[in-house]
Amino acid sequence: MNSELNSRERVLRFFGKEEIDRVPVFSGMGNVTVHGLEKYSWKFADIHVEAHKMAGMAASTFQLFGFECAVVPFDMGVEAEALGAGVNFYSTHTDVVYPTISKKVAEKVEDLDIRVPSDLAKAGRIPLVTEAIRLLKEEVGSQVAIGAWVLGPYTLAGQLVDIGDLAKMAFKKTDMVHELLDTLAGVLIEISRIYREAGADYMTIREMGAGPDILSPRIFKTLIRPHLEQIFDAIESPKILHICGSTDSIIEEMALCGADGVSVDQKNNAAESRKKIGNELLLLGNFDPYGPMVQMDASQVGQVIKKCIDDGVDALWPGCDFWPDVKKENMEALIAAAQKYGKL
Amino acid sequence: MASEERTQEILKELRDAVVNYDEDKVVEWSNIAIDEGVDPFVATIDGLADGMIEVGDLYNKKEYFVPELLMCSDALYAGLDILKPAIEASGRKPEAKGSIVLGVVEGDVHDIGKNLIKMMFEVAGWTVYDLGKDVPLEKFLEEQLRTDCDIVGLSALMTTSMVSMPEIIKKLKEKNPNVRIMLGGAPITPEVVEKYGADGFAQSAGTAVDEAIRLIKMLKEEEMGK
Ligand code: B12
Image 1 (cartoon, each protein chain N blue to C red):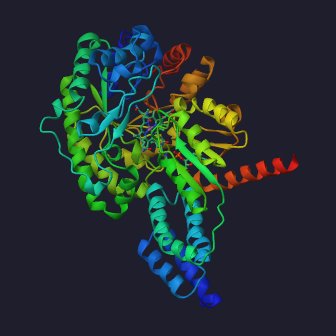
Image 2: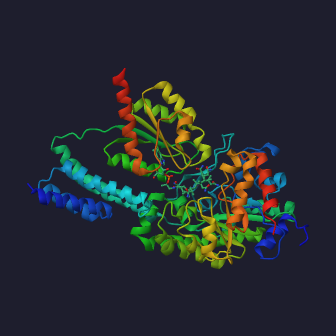
Image 3: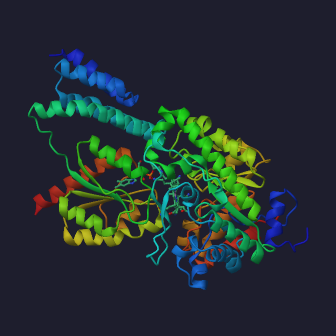
């Protein structure tokens, strides 16, 4: 295999199941770092609301360290905002504070009357994210794969209404929640289509609010999986399903959702998961983006990465968004470890 | 007056109805308890609250999840709505166990865990002042001074929001050396508690209240020792 593959080729060939030289090291989730912010002297709060800053930051981790992707957006308010929720960007803060939902669309599920905008491409910050994808395509599109993500329908529902009420209704008024998730799945399919059309190379669906830290595996199977299937049936490959936290008890269910790969975090026993899901489906993971990258000494990163590979992951991929104050040396150690242990 | 045997049966029905998150049954048996002369205080503590403790166990064993817990708690409150007025009418004042100011620190909206903790304290008869989520640090201080609570419980689910805790802990202790501070949330470990100068910690809703009681007892012993 010639070793001239650039990062983009490596990741796209990886998804296409073509031969590659080594395991790619990338993510489907946010991976901005404070080093990128420093490089441009930008405020964290601004990178969610200005397309060129969003694009610049998305590319910066690749440019500074060789992390093999450029992913947008960074916050979990984009889809909810397009459906009428309010978002707090903490614009007066100078440090890293992630945007949050400041105003729900309704308190209770039964009061939620979702009006899907007739043109989602123009709703909320979707045009902004789309513009950032276009800019990325133009500026770094030949060197690096561009990823985009949306929340899963249940997690999105938790951004729109009180999450406690949603959880209870999942039991008490299951049909009502099914109907809601069905509508939201439709919205997410359309947003995914818009992102892909703008130039995103792969999509990640993050259904972290429906994992076994919150819902039982039984509910995952009967209420959550059907709507994830609905989405994965309708969107183009490559497409990844991500759930963080404890996922050992639902990994087989995750595998049945129709994605090309499943993404899990460090709480998942990846070696076991590999056995459970077989070799056909991609397993992406599962290093902790906090401990090893922010806290540990750079010399320890290699072992963490080696373990992921020994456990059988197909790509080195963090369990969640990168924590922005990762250490430079640790980022370098991560890439070096991928090169050292990831040879194929 | 219900016989001892009948009382036990009523208490069991109340417990089971809470565990099975059956609001209607809880209401039905709370009314039966009152009609048949069961002490409403006993019905609350040995019936409803006992059921909730079992629910906490089921949650720790991963047989119950967040929705089940919330529904059990609704069932419990439905019973309280009936039994509480009866307790008050009986002239008996349930002794207040303690008071806690609770909130998720600024920049963090993860409040599912905090809400479960709140519920467990309420079940145990504590007065809870819930500040909600994304709570500015000064707010904890203000609320502690306003309520003179025994415990301040800080919750953080993100490592970035967690790091703002030492500052608030320091300020709280400066203003009121007797307040006890408990931390919780996924990234919190006993080491973090120690390093930040807090007093206690609970991994889960099941153990939080016991830990708070332990802290208050320790404080009282210290004061007696002086
Ligand atoms: C649900 C969830 C969300 C929901 C939150 C909804 C809500 N209203 O709470 C949403 C989708 C909004 C969300 C958003 C984000 N999230 Co989030 N989220 C989670 C998730 C999946 C579950 C958390 C949870 O509720 N657990 C269940 C509860 C019951 O457990 P618990 O909170 O630990 O509480 C128990 C104990 O800790 C204890 N306890 C809790 N509080 C207290 C307090 C006291 C006093 C005591 C004694 C005990 C105690 O008792 C509780 C009951 O047993 C976790 C991952 C995971 N699976 O754990 C990520 C996670 C917490 N999120 C994470 C991130 C990064 C984010 C975002 C920044 C993502 C983004 N790009 O924007 C945003 C944050 C925005 C912000 N500024 O806050 C990361 C944090 C990483 C880190 N190192 O800090 C996690 C860990 C995911 C991961 N694998 O990395 N998230």
